[in-house]
Length: 317
Image (cartoon, rainbow, N blue to C red; front, side, top):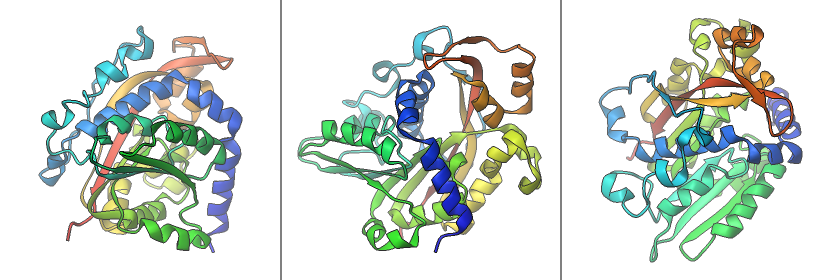
C-alpha cells in the first residue's frame, strides 16, 4: 500500500489539474516560452560535461520580455531537425529511441521532440505518463496527430508508486533511452521514491533529465521540515538533495544539478507567492513588479523564472 500522505498528495494534484486548468495551461504564454527552452536545453546539453565536472550556475537571463514569447520561436530557437545530429552528433535524442515524458501534462513539451525522433526506416516511441486524465486527454489529441509508421506516441494514466499498478509498470523496466520531467517535481510529495522508480525504467546507459523551478532561498534553509511559504513548496529541490536522490537513492551515475538558465515570464500572484524567493515576493507586495491583464482574467506580474537542471545516467553495465 502507498502511504496515506502520498495518496492525498496525488488526489490533491488530480483535483487541481482538472479540465478547466488544462485549458488555461494550454493558453499560457509562460508555458510556451518554457516549453521551447526546456527542449532546447535538453537537446543541446553536452552530456560529456558531467563526466568531468558539474556545470556552473548561469546568471544570464534569456529573452526580451518586450517581444512576444520573449523573442523565442520553435523555428528560430530550437535546432534545425535536418541538421541537428550533424551539430550534436553525440546526442541520445535521435530516431529509433524510446522516450518517456513523466508527468507529461498536456504534451506541450513532448510534441517538440517529435521532429528529432522521426525518420523514414526508423521507429521511435514516445510515452507520456501522468496521474491526470484531463491533461492526458490533450496529450492524446497530440498523439493522434503525430503517430505514424515512424513514431508511436501514447499515454498512460498511472501513479507509479501505487503498488496496484506494479504489474502494468513492469513493461517499462530497463526500457527507455531517456526520461524527461519538466516543472513537475515541485508538485511531487515523495519525489525521492518517484526518482528511484523512474531509474528502474531506464535502459542501461539511459539518461534522466529533470527541469524545474528553482528558489535560491531553499539553499539557505537547513531543515526543510521547518520551512514555510514558498520555501516549503520548493523545499525538495535543493541541489544537494537532488544529487543525493539521483546518486545515492536511485543509483544513477554522472549526476549533476545546477541553475542552468533563467528567463522572463508573467505569472499570477499565487504562483509568485508559492514559488519565488523572498526578494521577488517583497517586490510584488510593494508594487514594484510590472503587471498586465491576463488572458485568463486578473493580473499577472513579470518575474525572472530560475530553472534548475538535474541529470543522471543509469550505469551502462
